[in-house]
Length: 107
Image 1 (spheres, rainbow, N blue to C red):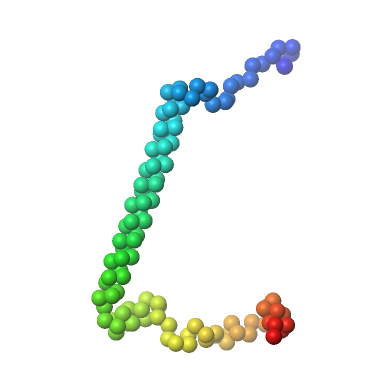
Image 2: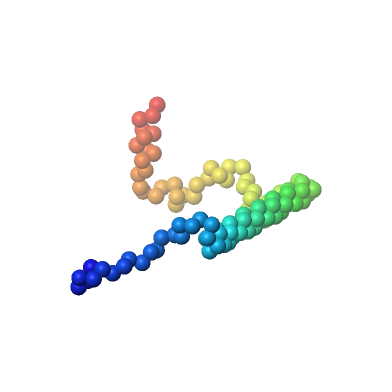
């Protein structure tokens, strides 16, 4: 109420008529967008699976020596024991972890 006069509140609600052409078109457009996104996602997933399958077939066709050399160049291969070796800098960082506390009482 302003100066004794009522100001009408604009209606910002959705249309009540569920069969209104604007609402039907808006819902149809939203559905089309969702379907296109789903189709594109499915196509991308299928392409990725096909790529992985071809790479697997290519690697299976390689000899062991060629596969090992390829793994060494790409960094996929680690010599036995490499995973256990920790550089001296990382071994003694000076901080005490929570694991040491818990391991002390576990026996």
